[in-house]
Amino acid sequence: MISPSYNEHAASLRASGWEVAEAATIAALHGADLAVVVNPNNPDGRSWQPAEIAALAREVGHLIVDESFADPRPELSIIPSLPENVTVLRSFGKFWGWRGCVWALR
Image (cartoon, helix red, strand yellow):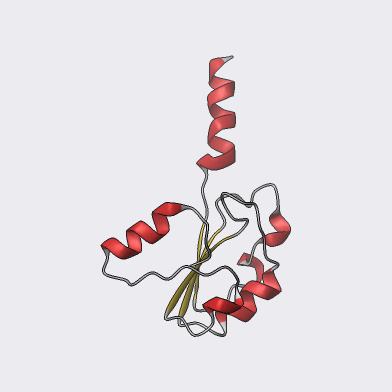
């Protein structure tokens, strides 16, 4: 998986018996059975265009793309052209949940 990144993906994979290797670039993930990319990345904000993600999907067994921080950057989403071997994670709470909390406090 891309590193540095959100820690829980690696922890969950290790707990499930996966061997996790950290990669600095998308190209370093080529050939993996399972690859994980957080797009845009947390904590450094790096991002990849959908074409880059789609190209990676062709080079790995399965790709998990965490788009939890993509709401302000919808152009980064792979969902409109989702390859068959890609699972996309989204989060309702990252942006919209806080907004609801602020509204409820008014």
